[in-house]
Each structure stands twice: as C-alpha cells, then as structure tokens.
Amino acid sequence: MSEALLEVKHLKKYFPVKQGLLGRTAGHVKAVDDVSITLRPGETFGLVGESGSGKSTVGRTILRLTDKTDGEVRFKGTDIHSLSAAEMRLIRPQMQLIFQDPYSALNPRIRIGDAIGEALLDHGLCTKAEVRSLVLEALEACGLSAYHIDRFPHEFSGGQRQRIGIARALILNPDLIVADEPVSALDVSIQAQIINLFSRLQQSKGLAYLFISHDLSVVEHLCTSIGVMYLGSIVETATRDELFLHPLHPYTKALLSAVPVPVPRLKRERIVLTGDIPSPANPPSGCKFHTRCPFALEVCKAEIPLLRDAGAGHLVACHLA
Image 1 (cartoon, rainbow, N blue to C red):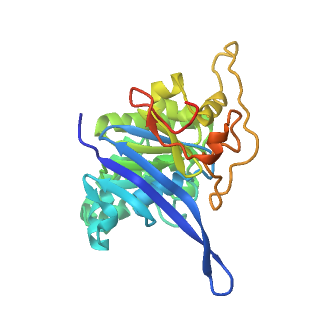
Image 2 (spheres, rainbow, N blue to C red):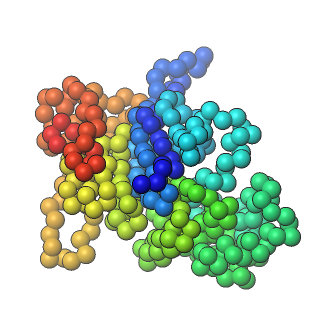
Image 3 (cartoon, helix red, strand yellow):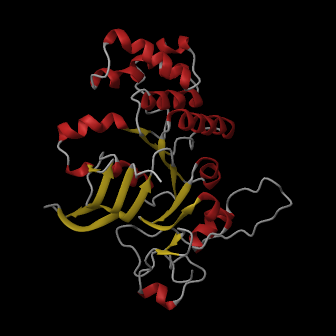
C-alpha cells in the first residue's frame, strides 16, 4: 500500500463568537470538531453530510485557506500549518480547489484563457510564450475546444464553466484536488458529464480527490471511501461498497434512505429526521445526533461516542452500533 498523500489528524476549527461593545469572545462555533482523514495517491475520499455540517470548512482548513484551531494536516509528510508563507506558496500548486459555484468562481472581465493560465505565470512555472499552449492542453483535457480560449465567462453554460474551473486547477499538475460541491449547481445530465470527467482525469493523471458533497448518489459513482459528517464531526467512515451495503450509524441510514432508487419497484424505507441540525455554537451533550435520532438511549445524551472499528476498517461513532 502506498504512503499517505494527505493525513488529517484530530482537526479542529472553531470560530469565536464576539459580543458587546468590546467584542469579547462569548463562545465558539465548532465548525470542525475532531476530524481525521487519510488519503492516498489516486484515491477519492467523499465527505458527505447536511448543509452546515462543516464539510467546506474541512476542505478550506486542509488547504490552509483558513487557519486551524487544533490538530494536524500533513501533505506528503509535511505539516502545512507549520510552514511560513513563502514555504506554503511553494506547495500551493500541488493542492488545488474546485469551487462550488461555477458562475462566481470566474472573473467576468477576464478571458478564460487568461483565467486558466494566470496561476502558471504567478508561480513562475512557465514563460508567457509557453502559457497559451499549456492552456490549450488543459482545455482539451477537460472537453473544451481551442476556440474557447479567447471567450469570456458569460459566453459559457454552467457545465462549461465548471470544466473551466477544473482546467484552472488541473493546469498546475496538482497531486490533490479538493472539490467542494463541484456539481451541485448543475443539471443532472451535466452532473454525469462532470463526474465522468473527474474519473477520466484521475485515471490518466493519478489524481487524489477530496470530494465534498451532500448528495450520496453522486459520491457513490466517484469515491473509493466515504466519511459522513454531522455537526462538525465524522460519525462514520468506510469504503464505498461497505457503507452503502452495511450502514451502521442512524444518520447514515437516514441519508441513504433519501437516495432515489433507479428501479421504482425496489422500495426503500424512508427515514425522515425530525427537527433541524443543532447550532454548532451550542452542540448537544453526549452524542450530537441524539436530539434527532429515533433510537436514542439515555447513554446517548450523556456520553460522547468515539469512533471505533466495527470490522474491515468500518469506523462508526454510535452507542447503538
């Protein structure tokens, strides 16, 4: 087994809550609360959960777009949060982000050829004479044509704009791509095209993806392993097949029950969760999910369940599993 490309250990990210005229800290929003992830070259780790569960904050903290509160993020064995700004700049091309919204991710006043190639020039990875040919290669790899290079963002559809975003990340030849809800703003037919593009690029270039999504049906087609997040913490993680065949956590079962069944006659019991996700500024005691769990026991209200191995590398944080 190859060495880990990315190791995240007990990552925490708390945002202070300021109150009063003096702006004193009255508490913290625990956006990410003890998350651990291991990702090897050529693998895809899917991070799923409801909106507000902290998935995007995990991705941004891993890329050091926001500073951590505690924990460790190691990329190729290096703790990136211990690096200076100059040292971090050297490894930036190896870690890239694909944004959720293809419409706001591009500057409307810049031609897409310049938008894709500007990072190459900014990092000194090529000369001005070489950048156009490299941009054309990236466009071709992402299913776009050479004549698109001089067009502006408003001339493209949503699916084409997302391909441009992928080309902009790909052109730096990264080892890791954090894809933050990259298909959620697209039509279903376009989603399939982008997912297939991700798969082809991974096979041809050996990329590793951290794929952030709230849609398990999308994650199922792309990911080798999956982590389920709830209120800042991972409650279950397993290989894709193991998670879909044998979900253990009640929250995971509820999410899977909402995935559409392709064959109508194959009915699946729908699990409807009551209430809203609690505030990360004031999470419940014990198991964070116990306020919405239909099977909660008294122990769930008092003790925080730790991730334990249920066999075959299947980890779950639940007193019932």
